[in-house]
Amino acid sequence: MESRTVSIPADLYEKIEERIGETGFESVSDYVTYVLREVLASLEGEEKEEVFTEEEEEKVKERLRALGYLD
Image 1: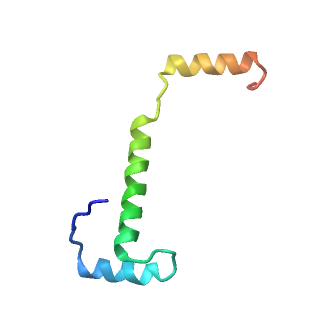
Image 2: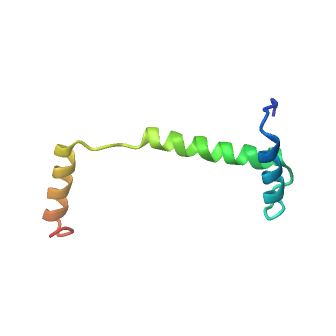
């Protein structure tokens, strides 16, 4: 995989270096790559999240009531 260089503040790098001692990560780069992938994945998940309109939500609730799942 091709890589690029990104600069981060020295104090942040040192904090990460301390933290990876408690994890299975072998380097600061591995840790930062993992964290960035997780953040991006969660943001992409938010974008894909479906939101019901009030009307759609009410129809779902009515159906669940009819099936006995809601009072």
